[in-house]
Length: 605
Image (cartoon, rainbow, N blue to C red; front, side):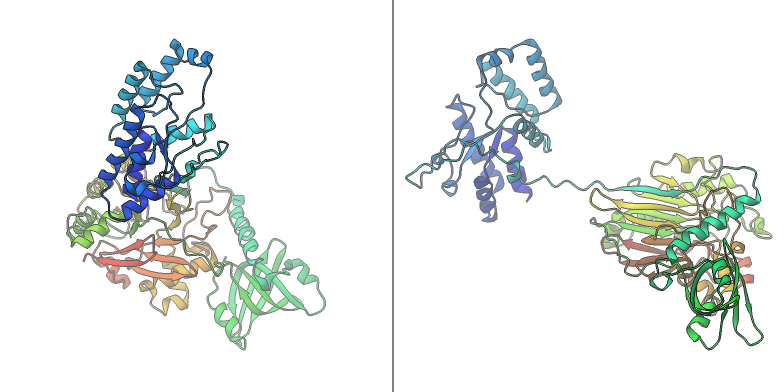
């Protein structure tokens, strides 16, 4: 209750610590509708009157000084410990006086340990004058410090409604737990959890093999946690078995083929050797699952061994554990997700993008839409800020800005309009001026100087992970950003994706990758930079939100507690896209309420 807290602060600022009974009485009077300012003045007036007639700093307020509704309460100025004459003399030294003045200048409220002399009284009045109208926690902090230094006890108080005095045990200390805490807004922060920095060096074959070894080691550990994969055996040991028995192995898919009878035959490889695995058409579930298999992914197989072959009954992927908690922020904030702006293209939808900028600045829209815009605290842009140069044949004929610097400067012109209370996280895409191999480093400063200088812009690698909405009591929401350059490969090579919507079903692609805990499980799907000891495209920590782009078609779906979002685009269909059969859906902006995890899609085109 703000009115109650204000009264308590005012009392504490005047050196008064209300008892628990008084606190309850204040609350009941406020609930009854009494004016807070009037109640505050009555309490202060009665205390001031009592203070002026007593030289004892341990003052109790008699009930006849209070309003009739406070007849059964008691209140005392913050008690202090009696001191000896020697201690009293010591407080008058210059050193003590300097310390006292330092407290005054720092704005800290203190209570003296001596009855107020005329000199000390004047200093206290000056101090209280300086503290007037300051609503903060400093007074409470000072009282806590005073109480820690001295044992505090209640004095005897008189209750006019009873015939006997109510005696409180002097050994019972006053507890500040009776005073309600001042509920400040929680400190909300963000944290860049994963950001890859590329260090160029001469590559060796060992660098590439380390990629696959680290991938196998990490994903094998996850697969072993599945109940049906508890008794995993290495391939070399299975090959040594002479009798048929149930067997489980984990390995990298080295090859996928179809027999003349229409069965699927795999070659799995681990660190000890290779082995053939056959999935027959008669096992419909396993056969259907095997039709999604691609080169280089890591899987587990459970089946019956027969010589140097295993007849598979089940295929197990690393996947996301079932029952993942959907994390929700304690504070109502929103995050929005963009991608593929393509500034610099003649097909760039400048007017529509400016319409979005005006909305996020709360300049346009209904009152409700403006309020929503004000609650947006995080903006994610998943690559392709500009159209670039030389990305596809004859692109130069479709550019309004012929230089990288010019295109990024134009992009920065839009981003500068966004209020600085909104944190903006940006990763590159295949049209941006960084190397194409993944993970892509953050943006080169010589081309994006203005973006680097913006205080609310964080430039990241592709992929990267950011934790948003963190507080002292909430671990935050993890957002995985990946532009999605590998998506083209899976649309072309996975029948279940291609035949069920292809580029219009980014949710199927993202589910496919989450299931394999890797952003590009097939080595052919994207260029690699083998600059890291471990595979940087592994999805090591399951995100709460996964954001991608690249395919210019917005999509929102959920998979095992993960919100999958594909950004839209701000570019009309190009001649190149038309030749490829792409149909973009521009101007869609997914927005997530972090408190409820509800997702809506705003339309600006």
